[in-house]
Length: 415
Image 1: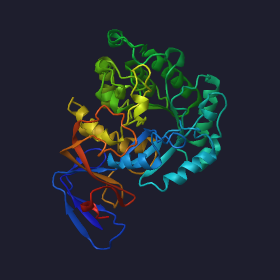
Image 2: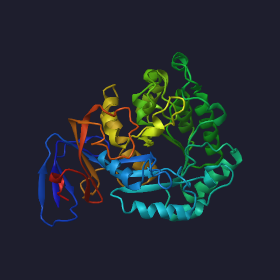
Image 3: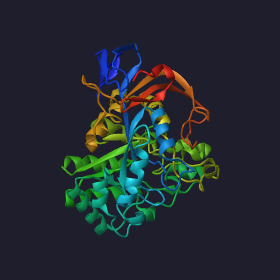
Image 4: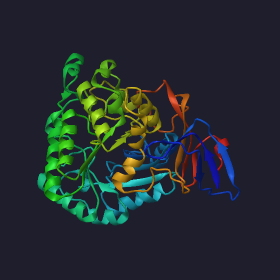
């Protein structure tokens, strides 16, 4: 048994005055005690929306590089989205990814596709994927346009007790490369109107009302979307949502440098959109914060802005970005809860809290230490982060998952 002392133990809701935490030891019967003083002790972070690119796109990332990157970011549970090649749309593909994930250091939960090949034409084998252990269904990257098929998907998912995780973007309005508005005009970049998202959100809310299914809206980014979801919750509709950490930190105006590492889908919000995202976090409309870790090879991003793919890696900078967001006025305890206890509660999974009972997933974080984001420090195969070459405040010192150290220097070999 290992006793860890700190005056900054975060229990999933707030920093606790407790100074002793019992952590289950997997390797030693002898009792050990470590005093961490002012270092933060957090539950292992839970990231419910990420792309491991496995199978079929492993030049960008794979299960092993992705989970090492997650551990470096203090994350011990990751939801892997199904937009791979081929898509995760069968029981066999779920079992394939599960078998690889079991050899990684952290907990990988799998999201299955709603339709075969994510093509929006025919439902995938949802029941069999549920039997294989998926935590939900999504055609992430694609919005399921066929409302009748979407209705049936929700009915099946509801029977299975699993959520539909919807990528809300009306494709006929999609066309551009950043948020449509004053700055897209100034920068000469084709814009995506905010209605592309809110129209799709409204459809999902209505179908959730019709079917009583749990519909989770992924990476909301517009003022209207937040307001629609807020009202739906007041009406008792079973709709939840999350926000990507990058949308809390960056805005459309930050694309003045045409940096493709900041090109993301949905596009970076306007100031007004971002303000409403903050309000949504504070009033509980927004249920969780995600990284939407989306790796791309260097050559794929080193092109002109309007040719580059959408996506930013986010595992390894998640906590640093939350610190920066907290400096804008949002309480750090609220932000931390949205990557620990809140997503655990949302999806009914273990973790995300620290109690008096022994646990095996936790993160040790120094909010004052700095680290340089570089080839030498990143564990992801990809480098598409706007922080590359920059020094960030806040450093993960150690991450423990399943009772074992999965990141940290040798002095943390205490488990």
